[in-house]
Image 1 (cartoon, helix red, strand yellow):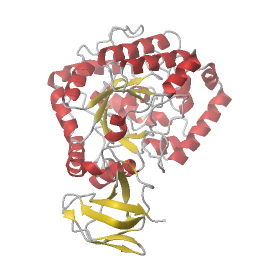
Image 2 (cartoon, rainbow, N blue to C red):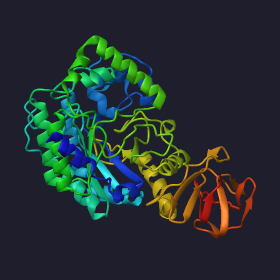
Image 3 (tube, helix red, strand yellow):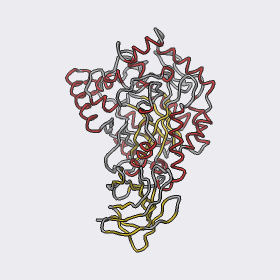
Image 4 (cartoon, rainbow, N blue to C red):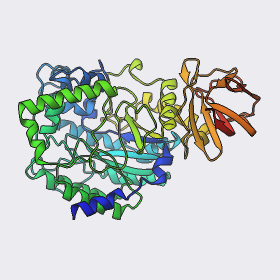
Length: 480
């Protein structure tokens, strides 16, 4: 029975609305965003690659504040003692609820649409167990640990009214209201997957989210606490409720083998492997479960065009949740952000870029609004080179002014995207002209070109501040 359901799931194809989208917005907004603090020394990839036994105590992710607080002497514990004294983490929930009085979900939705994003994924429950909807599934360890206001429902309605797809994140692998041991390494994380009543609790909550909100994306994190048999049925029921739904790749079902991670030799082997993986991948790449819809590398990307749909998941700075400690140098600059977007699209991926609102007043910080505006300004003029495109025969190897030219394609048009180009001739070593070739600079019309032994040479005028000029190459071929 389980194998038959798994085969049914594998026949499900990631819908075109998702593969065409190219840009989505993640939203991490938890009681930890009231404190809004995490160290900014390193991004998550280098931190995990360090091999430290307490690496996660110094994570740059503010949404891990409660875990970091459990390590005496950590940056968070020191900060908390200085600023909040003996105040428990749970007290931040009241501040978060009070801040909702200023929340305007319709304004958020308009801002997200204007960024050029095509879908939004809201964190409905992170590792601290706080639920952003008035769940009817009672938490046996922390009753009432949820918002009174239906944040999920209100934002879903606002986002959908702007023509965007709406999805939900759920932390299935960790819930610190069920298991609050301090987590310093990857093996600690795996061994902390709650047992007992938690698997039934998590499944009931996800079923509640599906029934109430019909999320277009169902995004689990870490792993999943039930057996494969129960998980396959859950995902089958999700697809029956949302036929064009999408699930990610962090649904590794529980098995008795996971309990072996609590043995020290096994934990040591896992930590060595995860450290090696972080060094190789320059970030976090989840292990591949028996079934998934899209791959989700975190703060890193794949080097090549992938056989499976994928999205790069990252914040605008080094955190997902709001971090007051972030300085300008910790944020993506305009050229880096837009260059990353076209680089990911050239290899068939999406960028799921995070927004981390403040907890005390429910507003999106100015640094983040500025970056959403950068995206909106570029996509509004270059959307045809992005949305609904596929990778060309290869992402691109030509370097112009120190940046790689990236290619996307649709039909008989190839777009050459030129991050950082400031005008002047460009020779595209990968491209050969044909008898009916036409070349345009997007937004400016046709431009002169010539077919040379070194590749297609195109005259590009000064782009006038455009950070990523785009060339539309009609009816060209790849050079051998």
